[in-house]
Image (cartoon, rainbow, N blue to C red; front, side, top):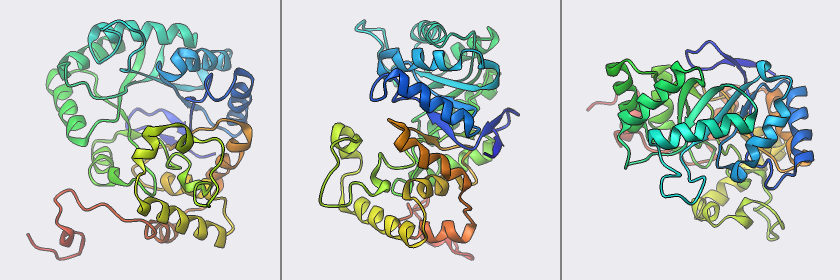
Length: 328
């Protein structure tokens, strides 16, 4: 397992981050703990969670897993999504944040989080309100670094500007979606991260299982996010996604690689990515994913795989600017 510096923090994290969304939902406690142990044996020291996962149960199980080894791990959690029926049990307000962090710390059995993510954008709450509250949590020692997930590049850039102007703790890590069939992050989010030295732990490197090949045949599996989640089906609506997945699986087979491991290695090789987040529902799913850290992804090989999908247009929508000598 390789280790990389998380943005400008100086923290060394494994090149794979394990996401624990399955803990307590599609993976029972025993299976979750087995997967955690396998990740640690593989050298993973980076674990991602959220208070909304399995209604808090994911944090509780992860808390049991990390008992006795907390200081050896880099731990994240997130807040935003409703955690109760109360009208204020959600969002980015100071009130919800302060209640959320206490709940997460209790469930995880720790005094602090290394990284604390805002899980979504909240148009109802002033950005400065959220950033000041995160700064307070850092000063209190309850979090080491604020972070953000699922924000647009302009929103992240605006937040960085406010933090610099007001001398507040800035976002040091971001968590966007990124995979071979969803490459929008290449347009502005990843260039922003590289420019501002932000750590990036991207999620959904397998496109919810689409890139594994199990949805390309005439028969669908009995389990999987495409089967169980309507939102996932809408996210990857369109034949082009399935065509790319089919071409990718053919490429993987021709090169003797496990498709899931190769898809993760492709994400991992982007210079703006610190660590892709992997996840699994059982050990059978997890084992090949851990092998992605051993795949050699040369620039030439990554370019071959990239050519299997449609690259998003540049931020200015001037395709000629991608060519040397392009003029405005």
